[in-house]
Image (cartoon, rainbow, N blue to C red; front, side, top):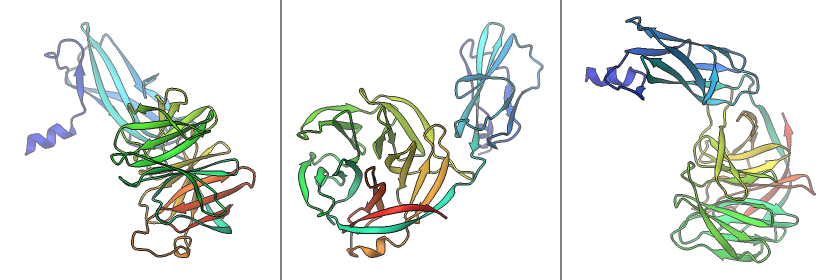
Length: 340
């Protein structure tokens, strides 16, 4: 098994020229984990002192120097590093990765409960968003997935579109008089006319293979795929443009789920977290700026056998309040948030 261990510890070396001329050069980094403000130092281990025609380094595909300072607003998460070597007309690429964490710890938030409203306990809530006084909801589970228009005060479902039994409904958002809904593992999303809730077309995912949460800033869409990544999508074509990774001062946060855009930040549920929390994410660099602890709400709903996690967060701009619920929760809660 010794050869397997050696193979796993060698940094990948790919040749775009003559693959038989392996220069046996490796890329070295001064450390593997950084915070914003730290300096990355790159070097080569060149035991045979092979003469290089030239070399250039990149981070996330952008050219950098061998000594590179991570700026305060740098995109966080796992950063792919490359060294492109040119030797006797052949190009070789050395790959490595470093992790860039946020320098600051997230602020902690709590909530004040304002109101409790009825909610369909048969709804496996996946997405939640207001349009004026109307609440739109997407529900999941195969054979039970739907798109709904809901009167949030009474809990009455005013209109419901059932998805085909093969689809597992996920997040939704409203933009440009359209409703956009995701499905989970079918690599498919749907675009509906907001006025009559009739489906106009479907679209496929590309780089983001699964559909989890969805929100928008009025211009672009933001999509989670169950990992730490939040993808920016073109609102017209739903094609991925770029992504950030939700990152704290200690780790990358995975299983980012339902999303809500509020005043320049993304509020996100985390699926199957140990606590009922929402993280507040800077969409420009992925920094987790805050964590909201919604402890206690789950105890206030009917304790049915299929009761599941907190999921579903919608902001009401007119009331300046948040509405939260969960999967198969019998109540919808209106709250305000306060920093501890």
